[in-house]
Amino acid sequence: MKNEFLLYEFWILSVQGAFQRSNAYKKETSEKQRIEFRKKLKEFVDTELVSQYKNRVTDEQHEQNIIKLCNYSRDEFGVLFEKGSLNIGVSQKLLNLYLKYQWCNGWIATPPHFPVDRIIQQKIKVSPLKPWTRFEDINDYKTVIQYAKEYLKETEYSNLAEMELHLFNRR
Image (cartoon, rainbow, N blue to C red):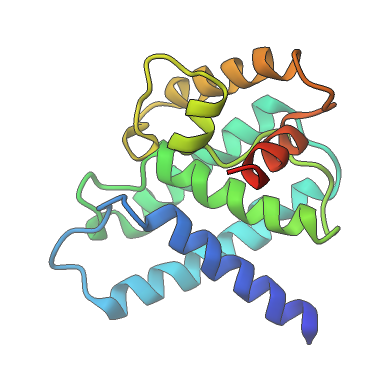
């Protein structure tokens, strides 16, 4: 019961973090439609994606999961969104936040990446900065991850998730 409560809270925090500045929904999308979408999206993420992270996944697997999240939103709920689906930026933020919370709680293996936002891009010196809410292509995301891998080499951390956690805690 405690774990179900935490999982739900992690989901709510992840949704809030991913959708906060995204303007993803059409203006006419009702609250009822948004709630139904988030409910179905959670089912999809929990059953189709998160289970893979019990063990370490590759960068490529993770990037494909971000794309799957975009595709799911398009195929099942495209009419709700301004651009017909969630974009890469919102999808990566949602999945990466959700994984981060579960990893910090010891439920999954270390995720390969981290939630990309403006602050982390500034800390790892991404140039030029692109708002994460405007990542339309997986290559936008991969560019930031490549900067992070270069930055990681100059730290004592062994992976990107730990490095980001340290940088996040020093905000």
